[in-house]
Length: 329
Length: 281
Image (cartoon, rainbow over all chains, first blue to last red):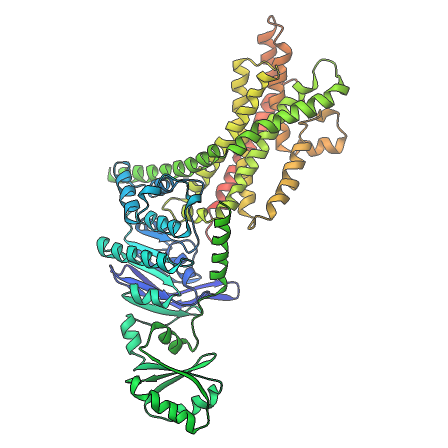
């Protein structure tokens, strides 16, 4: 049995197809990432799996339960941390946890112990009895993650767990997630548009764009599939250079971004000077040449033909809301 | 046997869910000092400034205006608080907590019930505070009448909180909030006869009042409080007068009609609320 299995999942909002035939299988105990830009359909997919919205067509099973026929069983067996904050800031951290425990019918006897453990895990024990209004963005996110654990879900959904957090806090959240997955042997589905996050945490990722899955595999598989290193050439004459470079055998693949050319080359470091010479001989001025091992960013570019943008509409809104939330204190 | 146990477990889970949602509502309300303070000062201003001011030149025979106004202000407080609390679902949606409740393994009707019971509890507490002001303003009530008033208030709170949740489910933005205050609160309040005798108003206004559920709340409370007020100093006929009030009322409608309308309205709003809230997109 798979922890998650979807078959040809489709969700339309009017004319817009948010999820366009997604089929995924996630094994128990796996950390699975849905990677894609804002508006790719990640959150919609998660909302369907959590029985928040109904799919237009297709099937989905969570822990073996049909999301349409047994939504309550599905909900009992999952935990979710939403992309946007979903805690009551007029209550204390502990009160938020207690209400959650009651909503999920965690037996009274073990409730307090579970809450204490979860608070401990995210290092919020000291602040547990303060109103959430006084928490920072990172603390709120940690509280939400802790809350998602109280009822010991078999599958935990994390929708953009580190969105809008500073790099340090992000690093800590990642540590928690890793530790948690190991200790509890939980299946984790996370959505993200941070390539670094997916690379660090996920056993397997699916790259999703415009509601469709472009490619699926472990981060290292995906990176190796590009067939070599990436050499980025910055130049004003992209088209001309692209045409010239694709003539050469050592160049496995050529992709254009807005201001640079990305070439896939095996043993890239040996070819940097060659590329510089070729460009000069053809009269193409080169601004810079860099070489690096492929990242998931390059994988994304390869399979979707465009770069992932870190600052999308929804993300921007989210940041704005967090800032406003901060000022209300 | 095991099926019975399973059913029992499930029911327990649902009830605990209702309790959790209720508890959150009540905790939030009690913590909101500003609201509690305005719960008392608002009605006091109405009674003291408006009531005494208008009452000064009315000088009606028999009933003094502050006494007449008092049940109206209790009703107003109930109405405004109930509407406000039901509408708070918009806030829950805006600030995300609605999702936390909807994704929990309880039925939507349980979330609705918790929200409704919670809102009704808060509105009731507020109403109780205002009703207790009666003793400050020298309006004396028999304990029995006081209890009867509480029953009417509970019913009212359920009805208007449910109504407000129904409205809130149809609204997506916080901006519409002030529209509701203007187009629901005000017409309901002014056409209910809370601040003037409806039976002496022009025909169109009376007709409007008959379709206004708050009219029956005002009428019931006024019947109970003033009806009792009139007979309080006549111990000889007290029993008879109270019975008469219960059966026929001494205001526009008999008390049983007020209660019947309120029960039907509350039941209809609760069912509608449960239906509207229960659907999944």
